[in-house]
Length: 237
Image 1: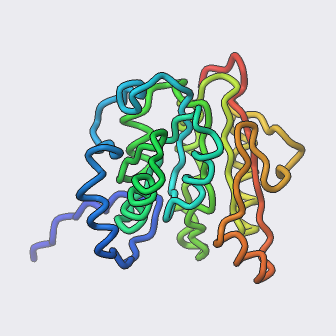
Image 2 (image 1 turned 120 degrees about the vertical axis):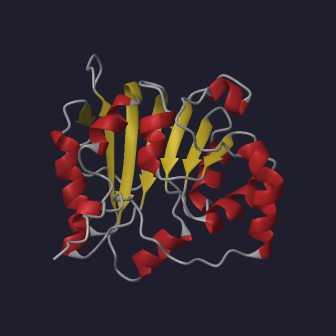
């Protein structure tokens, strides 16, 4: 009797595979503007000065969705570079379309899984801040292992923060907020800038705008939890 050889398991990803509607306008934006505002994924470090065409502090946003928050914050802070990472084509297309329409010069996009991007493309201590707003909550208990904000990824992410740089997270899932607070508090390279959760929204560089997603959750009675941590000065992550 022969047995079938073991098959390797697919890698765990930080997002759920969903079919989103990729509109003609979004596809056109990708075709026209990704070469200008996009950075193809590669296993090589990104030169921020070259990618943005200037030297400026850089903030990473993981999972920008349709880019509503990214655009609002980038408009607030034209002096900051914003690197957005998203896997879904519809969101990438939507943000590229808005970047072109509003003539924003301080946003660049990588369409790839955030774990790979942080590990392979970002230098240690290169980021002024990180935004992770409403990451996939993976609500079923058996899927909690797929949640992004846990070890070992948090340790990797902390190593990419410059001393005193910040990590700002938000979720409207209470059990995920508790897990975030526990995991972030246990990371030696990070320190909580508040006693527990942060005021909503609060950020040392720019306030997180209340998006349609956030407002809809509030109308439905969903509390939103913000967490604001900083890279501990003098700590080697």
